[in-house]
Length: 79
Image (cartoon, rainbow, N blue to C red; front, side, top):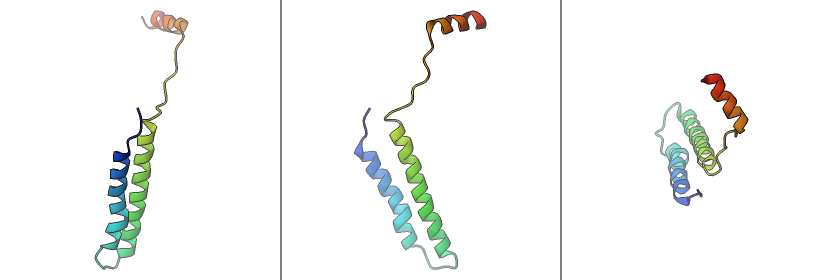
């Protein structure tokens, strides 16, 4: 399983739109700077979370391996 550039590009464009374009086109108001800050922080954190989840799928962690004696003991213990 390898990385594909298309999802990374599409998600970067989407969160770039949210974090760069939307703060610029916000209407004037008393809380404009706060809303801009919220949009930028949201876009950066959501994009970074998505990127980490996407990259984690390329090299997933594997669970522990059980020895045959452990499996037999569990089978006898649990029935």
